[in-house]
Length: 206
Image (cartoon, rainbow, N blue to C red; front, side, top):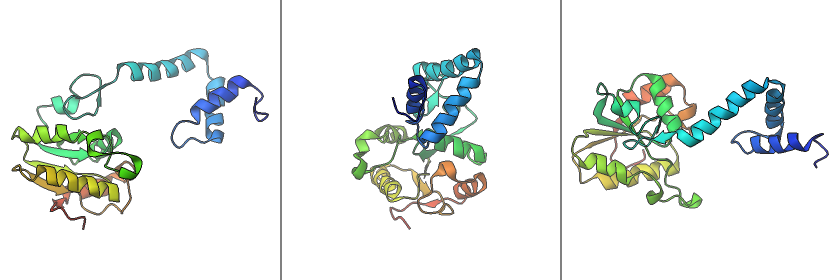
């Protein structure tokens, strides 16, 4: 047992918490000790929620966002503009854009961006299903709302090339978001403005 911990049970719990992104050992220890002070039924409620999420959460068959049902509430909403699709990297980005209350279309979650250095190729992402949605002929505009990084720009260009044969407008969010910034951490006013002031995408990064 590591001499830093008075209990192997505590050490094991801290080790598991520290596997979470952005959680170091000190933070993990604080979280574990916090749970240890809670009543047993509260801790059971916490663990039950995580297990239920893992076992029962679905991914929307249309946009690939997380959902309780086969089709998420946004895709199932007839009041949303289904001719307008906002392409994002992950589910956190859907939540970020929704919080702006400036977008009334639907989404398409890629599940990442093209990154050869990390072994992520186009086939690892939900790009083909995006093309299939456009091929149906009902989509009028695609907004590319990926992070302003080399990987994001590479993914934008790849999608641009794939969609050139279709009669669909391609836009990219305005560069009010700093290079390298992720949508998840962008304030709502800036993100909302970048969507409203989106510009046509011509295959160029600038």
